[in-house]
Length: 489
Image (cartoon, rainbow, N blue to C red):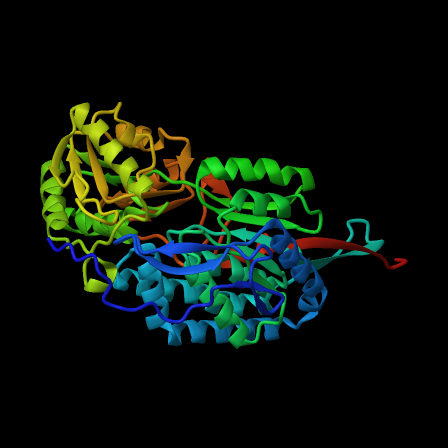
């Protein structure tokens, strides 16, 4: 395996200040913080470290722009999104380089995310003109009922580090289409992609104040200040369940509209009649996409006894073929995002091994700078292993054997989380029955990726509420107003 930790590409020009009211500003206190390359720990750039004062200024700009933006024709809003889609696509190479340098994933993975991220702008550029109301006659015939859809108002978006562009466009796209203004607080580990996106949207013609971006290490202070402001009307957060619970509590004071896309602990079910080769292909996508640092990642592999050895052997061979190294070097697998993430992965793998799990490959971090962890397959994982209960944000596949369908479904549902599940079987009846019984918001049947901008993304239970993408996505940013009309009939 290769362990080239040195970047083969320089950082393209990236804004390093706050984007507020259509202007690049330094932080009010003059503070900055560093953004590091997780492959080697070197500092890539320094960006503005926003204060609560800056957060209020960003919300001021969003509030000032809200009325005019809501009155902008839907077609005009859609055309801005369409131009944004085209500009993102044109700048794929620069965006991919920035993303790989700040987050760690391979250039191929970054390019795939940029394609996915851009597609949200294209999808919602088309949805902007499809917002409709209704007209009806009252049951007694004495009046008419009109409903209309109007933008919720100024929004706050808190986005994660693992998909630094797509998790932004998935929120920004429908907000722009619906006529909402917004303040975006990207993750402090990966702010550069979002700053580039702000630059792109300004070039696309988005009016000043519609999008405002504040980068900060003081997330609690900045977000808390905004949640206490009665002018804010919606919060959308993607991140851990623990933080999500806290934000829901804070948002209750002003009764904000809230969307939460939280943690996942996806089961991957392989039944006896499955095409094992296709199941392994699906497992590589569901597990190794984004170095396993995804809420949709397959974290618990339940494989029928009749095919478990074949599946485990093939998956182990595929893992051993993967090349580790800097994402710009052509490697398949880059580093994890930071030391704490790598240490948690190591801790969970160690616990599984101590309890009787058999490490078939990997099972250890890579020595030296950067946060690399070897792709790992663990067989015969016991039910009491922590790795089956706690979300693994890393390249680890724990495998559990089952005998009966009911046993597999019970094990899959035995978690507080319910975002995604994967099912591999050739039996259509089984596929439908199992999909209906799984307690998740999304199910991949014989495929290892479920995300699609044209489909509603979201979970149930402690994985959150609300949907992003699809026709449902824009509804999160619209209020329904009813007008009672007396006709004299």
